[in-house]
Length: 280
Image (tube, rainbow, N blue to C red; front, side, top):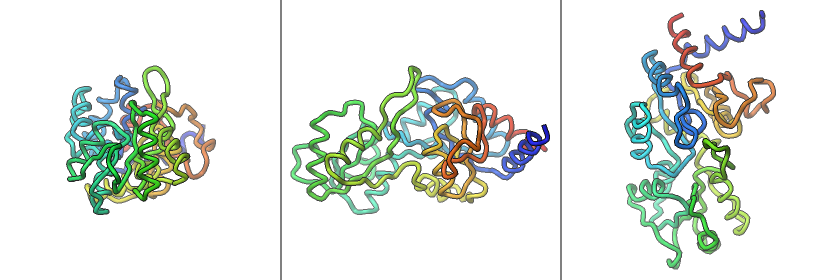
């Protein structure tokens, strides 16, 4: 009993200091296209309690505009600037590297972000390109793998939006971008530059956009190997939710580099605890 009371007090003290929440989408707010019960109300409670929310996702299938529309569609008020995606991150990274021609293994959201940065998307008939960008692609084919292989072997940068092995859906986990990235890495013998979690690039972009600091910022997600690992690497607070991939509520069971600071059963439970901490 005393240990539980001490843990609750520590959690309250941590939550009281937070002003920025980097909230994952898949497994936290939605499963597939289905909203997780109470998530929309939880976001509103966090905001009313003084927290700023940015939605950060490894899923590169949607542009920031598309993601914002989807969030609004399930009752979560959101503007494009409230979202950070690995599609946007990839486009910004390649523009900064002065890349021009890009071969894409990915979906429309990734292509939209690349085009907005002035990059030219080429198909497999092109002689060469500056970079191959790989994300989730539910139309992935052997031909796409072969074209990516050829471009990378001829010197194109190999960029992965993320290496998530699976995605949580209403019907269980399905293959994620990591499965596609691995196939291309295997045939090329090359390791990609990975921009998404557990890389700290999303956290760094969020801090630049908001002016927050590491000790005032929490990463909220359902995956220890990506969300919590990113929080650990960046030096901010890691909050694990059990509505997606993870179901273990014993903090000590997680490897040190993936260990959350706090575990909540859901976003709704986190929001309630945050409201209480801010009022105490």
